[in-house]
Length: 322
Image 1 (cartoon, rainbow, N blue to C red):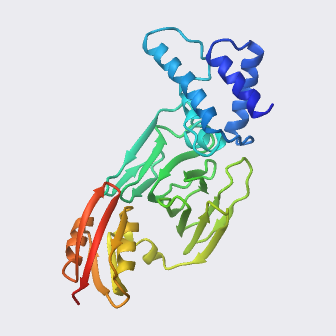
Image 2: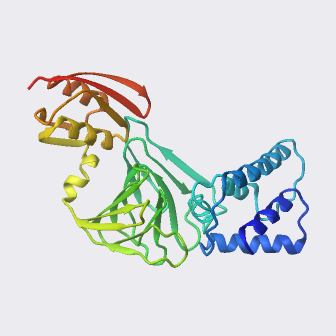
Image 3: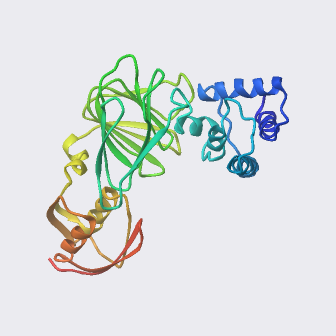
């Protein structure tokens, strides 16, 4: 069965016109999708058509009408519609795998706030600013699945029988029990840093895809555009400095400092004006909010700044004071 036939069956099922045989075909395809054995991208037109069908079913349910949806619940249909990359990726990242029937929880940090959250198995995740994590109330099935946006440091309880998996920006990270950091704030690059144990990563979400193993004190950078994975040795303390809420600069050019701050707080900072390489910063900031750091920098560099929105700041550079 190809994608076009499958989508036609979906529409028939949504309208209550699918035969028992066709419903069985749909269930079989969903099973293949959930096992990541099928990867069908949807066009904008196809997403829109399905979205209209689901909206109709939601409206009918709100009115109390009985709509036949069988095990393929309206939530699974809604998940299909919100796909940004493919059926495989979104069904997996929406929790429609071993935890498909679980209620999911979402935790979010703001632009100026970090937070630690405990997962159902006792594992913990420390989220950086502007990040979010989704996980089921209980880890059912044969794996522990969570969805990460932004950056988070995980300390995972060991369980050889139930791997721990993180999906972040199209990258799958799998462990049994270890501590590691994932930064998926950049749309093109995902970084995985290992503090202890071994971690497997891949940008292929199909079932059975091989994993690239990463050792402690190593970082894997996954390029989502060209699919390349680069592994390198790193200074673990430097890579995880954000956890300690500490940033140190030793005669670092102002533009690089601003880039680091933007990365740390997951916010775009645009510099306007000719800074030059001679304007360097030597300072350490601990347990400071974004705005406290900016005000502190004004003692070294003469600039004005304005907040465009929650995710962007513009700095108008004037001169270097030091």
